[in-house]
Length: 175
Image (cartoon, rainbow, N blue to C red; front, side, top):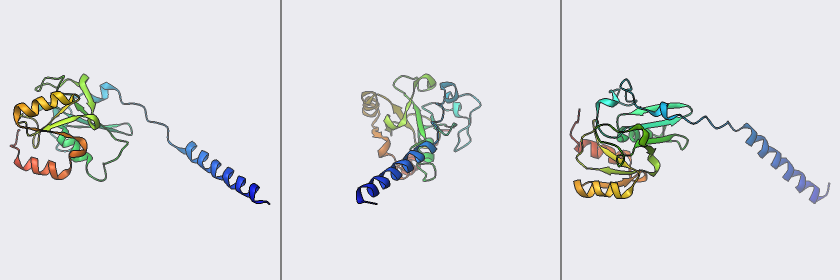
């Protein structure tokens, strides 16, 4: 066999392996409906077990493989998601946009992707236990809250377990 046919054969074999692997890829799971993301009076936080709607402020939801986990706050959700066994790119994270919701009763119609959200920490607003992260889709709304309250605007990549732990240790218990 000459060199050209040998290389062409190897290239063809490699291409067939790639096509076979692509064909084995799992189908995209169906999108979770807004109804599945809605927060109901019977929903309990996946982390602390408390009734989610008993607290003011934004809530969080993590969606992966057709499963929805709900949290009483963005901080609880991010604390869960940042754990190595949960920190996966295929998990979609949602939080309430507090620029379009009332603090005491966040509107489930205004859930946004947490990966694109602006979070305000240190605002002094009441929420679920531990650190309160106010979530916004609009950077100006987040900056206004931070300026008005002495808080600080963060992006998702700025938040880690250490920050959540430090802020939680300094936060009053709100329940």
